[in-house]
Amino acid sequence: MIRVIPAINCDDFACVKERIQQAEIFLNREDWVHIDVTDGAFTFNKTWNNPEELGAWLGDRRDISCQLEVHLMLEEPAQMAKRWLAIGAKRLVVHAETINDGSLHEILDTAKRAGAEVMLSMSPEMSPQKIEKILDKFKYFQVLAVHPGLAGQSFLPLILEKVKFLRQRFPNATIEVDGGMNLATAKLAKEAGANAVVAASYIFGAKEPKEAFEELRNV
Image (cartoon, rainbow, N blue to C red; front, side):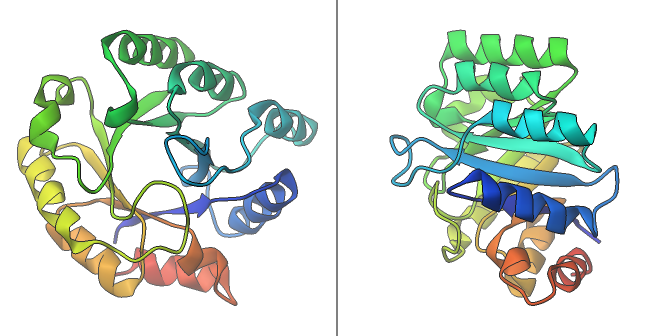
């Protein structure tokens, strides 16, 4: 069994609320929901990105029945990291391509004080060997199997070697694969060493999102 994290990739808050409510039907307290935020600069597209709006809604409801992971596909992630942590995000996903020594230290320090985790992501073409100097700062890794941004892209098999490298280097790490997930690709990710997959279209595009979630979890 592999951990499956439903991904929310939305243009407006109405869509975000609807998908969180859908996911809460089949997620437990220890499960995660993943929110994609993009800026139209690091990515081609721009998504909804207003943590305070979500925070106000969650405040009215007092809680969310799962853990919140936020994927910061942004050229300047540090400032947004603070805003997402302030409304209760428990894990931030930041890209190796968008951080420097200063911003990485700032994000790691802010997350530590908030009791949150930081996951390092890398786009399909990024080689982990090129960023070895920062790998040891992380216990959590995301390997993007698609290009940053749009949901519904096709899985890029070239990333499987990256998953294998990270698993060999970090036997106890959390390694998640994000993008292009279906039963076949989730199985490939698991066999390569991933212990989590992130899926948007496969789950929320299904007639029965709960069934799609369970199918992926049991690959």
